[in-house]
Amino acid sequence: MSVEDSPEHVTFLLLALSKSRFNAIASKGLDLRQAFLQAEEGFVYCFKIAINDGEDDTYALGINDVPRDWLPLSNSDLGVVSVPLEVEDLSDIDKAARGGNREAVNVVLDLADRADNEIPARNLSSFVGAFQELVDALGQVCKGEPTLRGAIPAEILQQTRLNVAGTFAGSFGISMRASGFSDILGDALLREAMSEVIFLLQAQDQEDLLSNKLHELKGRVTSKYRALLEQLDASSASLNLRWRSPKPDSRADVELSREKVSAALKLVSMMDLQMAEEVRVPCILYGLNIRTRTYEFWTLDGNQKYAGKLGDHVPERVSHARLKDKYVATVKKMVEVQSASGEERERWVLMDLSPM
Image 1 (cartoon, rainbow, N blue to C red):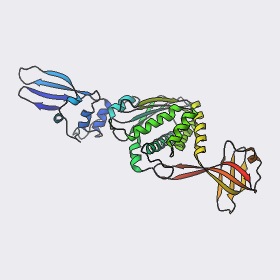
Image 2: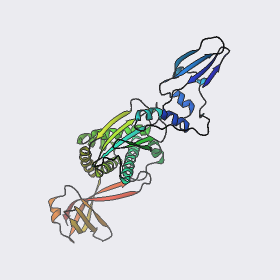
Image 3: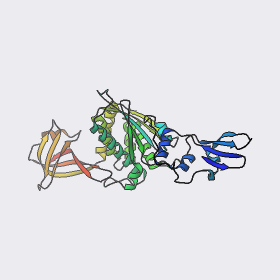
Image 4: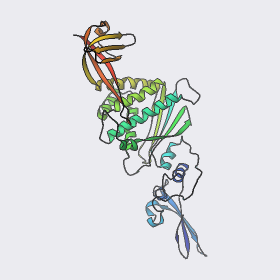
């Protein structure tokens, strides 16, 4: 880019670009001024070309030393109708974060008994959805506004949104990117949420760490983390997650084996149940199956039916309960809420039956 003319020299600035940074500029996701101010190498090249018999000069110039009137105007772009985008290596997450100036997350799912680098579409969509829901819930906590019910505000969902950029080989790799560009100097909400995701995953199946963190986070985080672990466990998948941020000190790699997924799921499910609302309901018992661990009862007035699973530690007397007898049922109310719509699904877990 030509920046200065004089009788002796013409001065140019040259900005080195990675493929992902070029793609960001070409697609008008990043303007030229920001591209220079956030140069990936921290400097630009300055070329002084002699007009007559003088000497040419080439040197590196730190970003802070570049005169601001040499830089492109804000919102300026390449000014072309169509630029062919370079093919990006999605597995190179460091270049993706630095070059694209966005939070980047790469996940590798290793499914048991599959060696074909493929994954069932249902498993993939369920995992990605559960991961996004967890990030949304953590974003709400980081914002200082955790809630148990209702939709998460659209402003928060916009800041925590991840886009699937593509897939790559290596078991099954999923490449996700922040929907917006990062403020390197600030603490982006997605960056804060991802820090909490990393803590939960690194805690693995350590009960004290998980319990303390989940009680601290509150809101709907516990149920969302349980849902993510359920998706992994149902797919018999291990997890390898790499997170990179344009902010140099925000990065992590974490692995969760199939065995650790199952162990963590048991702990988180127990904690989710402990934190759930407990309700006592006078009722008439109409169904109880100890083998399948299911139950069904109606309130005494016959207006409401409850059905679901038995808790893991119900008293022995529950197995001897008789159908059509009256009891006071102790149940835990588990509420699962969709982040965007606020749609709720209730599950009732039976903890005890006491004769009336």
